[in-house]
Length: 200
Image 1 (cartoon, helix red, strand yellow):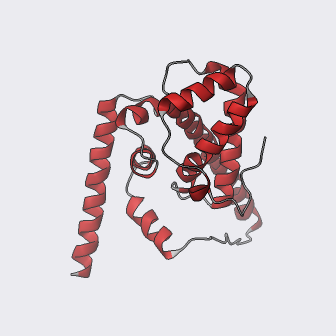
Image 2 (cartoon, rainbow, N blue to C red):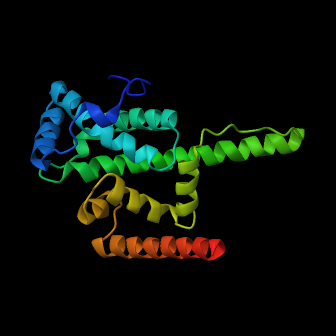
């Protein structure tokens, strides 16, 4: 399997983003039947979207590359679980979401261990961050949102998924997705309102 973490890979210009669901489902069915050229076509068509999904969640580009690679490994292992006739894009995003959650859990465990080591040795360590001004602004804007609200907004607004696709990918109902989006927008409006009040 090709490694997608290469620095010179520009996901936004290599593959067209608009694909018919039927094309993706056909490629997935062929992949399940052992056609690895179909797997390669899926990787080339879906990787840009999945990569943006990870980057949009304020993950560094190198972490996003790693998570993308892990996602394709998992997709390969569980490709037999895809049910023909079901939309394939939400299935991919559900796997990507689980990879991301596992990544966060691992990072939390690692950070907790590192923190205990730092406290026991009384050595202050610094974590270099590769954040830009706009990334900081986005992080501040999204900070009041719960993880599930951020995730749903990113799926809807960054990756362009429909409410139904987001509901499938998050194992939620469409009504639950709508409710989370509404609450997320309200929190963002409240945050922007409080920033304007402080400036005024």
